[in-house]
Each structure stands twice: as structure tokens, then as C-alpha cells.
Length: 176
Image (tube, rainbow, N blue to C red; front, side, top):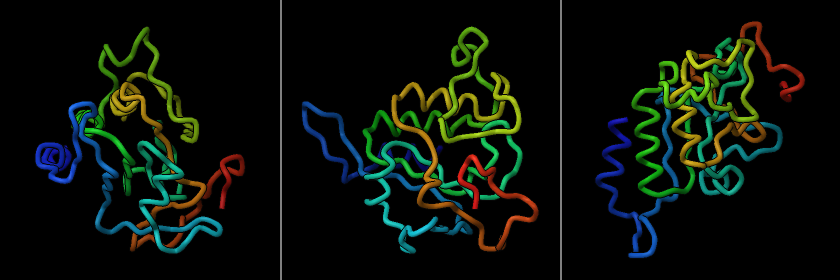
């Protein structure tokens, strides 16, 4: 969250006019040991520009290995890409990443129901108001941006992890 605050406060190439809020092309966040893994005939070279055309908004580049989490069964904390947006979107990201882990606050869990997960997220466990990442999903949902994965074109992986032990994607999710 501190890095996003720094970007928001110090971005010098954000265009602005009196009619429109300042905008950015993309914010890419990655672990230093994460790798891109093309799916099918996707190019070996990852292009932020091309991926932003196909996946506007916030995308998680997930790992194809399953990890059994209520939020999303694929390893989702390796790479994130926010395509296009304004300072308002950077503020949303700063809020979402600032308190991602806990369950939803009362104002983010209306009527005891958690915010809807992105349609391409799946879990073997129930998604509830007390589930990890509930506040994150709520904050991103408030911003009205697309939120999902890039699983049709890229997965992420770790340098030291060459294969999933005994896990694979369920066939209904386009398993490998």
C-alpha cells in the first residue's frame, strides 16, 4: 500500500486537464521471484499494453497450482496488473491493499452477504463475510472496474516451483 501511495502522490507522467482526472496506463505489482507462464499460443513475451487491451481493470496473474483458499483456489498473490485508471483508482488500490487480509467490515458486508467474487474465481470453500480478502473485493467492487484473472493467456509461477505436486485445475476451469 505504501508503494501505491507513493505512486499516487508523486506520479509525474499522469496527464490532467480541468475536465478529466489524471490518468495512468498501468500499475504492475509482482513478487521478485515470480515468472510469466504463457497459456496455449500466447506470446512468450508478456506485453502490458496487449494484456491491458484484453483485460482492462484489475487482473491477478494466478498460478495454475491449487492451494485451497476461500478467496480463490489458485495461488493469487504473485502478480497483479491494474490497467488504465485515475488517481481515484490508485486510492482504491491503496485502500484495498492496505487491509486485504481480514474479513469484511460491516459496511462492506451488506445484509450479512459478502461482495460477489469475480466470475473466473473459484473456491472449494465457502465465500463469507469473514473470509480472507473480503474487504479487498468490496473495495475493488466499489470502484466499478473489471476484476478477474488472465488465465486464458497467462499464469504466473515461481522460479523454485517447476510443477504442481498433485494439484491441477478442475476441467471446468480449463485445466492444464
